Amino acid sequence: MKKTIITALWTLLLAGCLTVPAFAQELLVGGRVVGVQISMKGVLVAGLSQVETAEGGSFPAKDAGVQQGDVILKAGGRTVTKAADVISAVEQAQGQPVELELERGDKTMSLNVQPVRSAEGQWLLGMWLRDGVTGIGTLTFQDPESGVYGALGHSICDSDSGIRLPVDQGSICDAQIIGINPGAVGSPGELNGCADMGKALGSIVLNTDCGIFGESYGTLGSRKIESGSMATGPATMISTLSGRASQEYDVEINRIYKDSSGEHALISVTDPELLEKTGGIVQGMSGSPLIQNGKLVGAVTHVFVNDPSRGYAVSINDMLRAAGIEDKAA
Image (cartoon, rainbow, N blue to C red; front, top):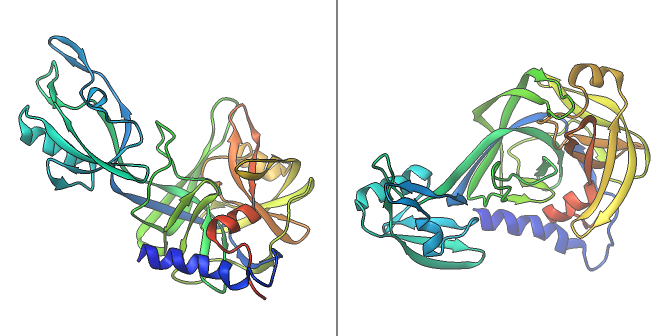
């Protein structure tokens, strides 16, 4: 199913690339809050740790060649889907070496790791594991022709290591905002949301630096709007601060810059209502669409930790490129 959807995403690009250069896309603009749930293919090694034993510190996984960012596919010959599966395999081995089948980049390998007994008597390999993530974010756009959507404006990463999570299965679902923790200097705020995982709105197929993308199960956007390019000057952002109702708030695009990952902008919140309610940009707003001169030009991605009234944005062109729908025939 994943391969089929990814192929569909790229078909839109190939359909117009021979005759039509990049131009404005007609999109359904987002702004609604969505729940996000991702499960991975295997279990991510988020970090390597020292195990304190009666004889001193030991690094069994590291010494065996395991690296941060590896994905464990099998442990003790059994396929693993969650961290508990790896823990169970180690316990069942009772001190004998545990064979781990790992995926590292585009390579698969097997390593034997010798567990050590901790000072508390537990057999351990010395690894921090991650097997999925849930949270909330904001929908940026939906392509009315294909049903492909984009959200968040940035990748979903492990919170401790910063490693981008490899997606096996995932979905966005219905959600609503039930409260706000305003941002302050040195303390990013957040939207408190309630997600209904039983009401799936779409699949998550791609987890990229420019956001998450997938196939929607119905109409998600509010109105049709053309895409455009960011420019310095006034703009608005669409976010949900209460329930499911989204609203536009005034912002300023202060600076635009490019690097190897694409085009970005520095933005500042100027809307008095938004500043009063949230202090500016808070967690959960990632993916909030930026509207400028009547066009969808980008999405909010991150907040300045030391100044919640300011943050970063990614261009809509980079989001469309990541989804494979930057170039499309009229």
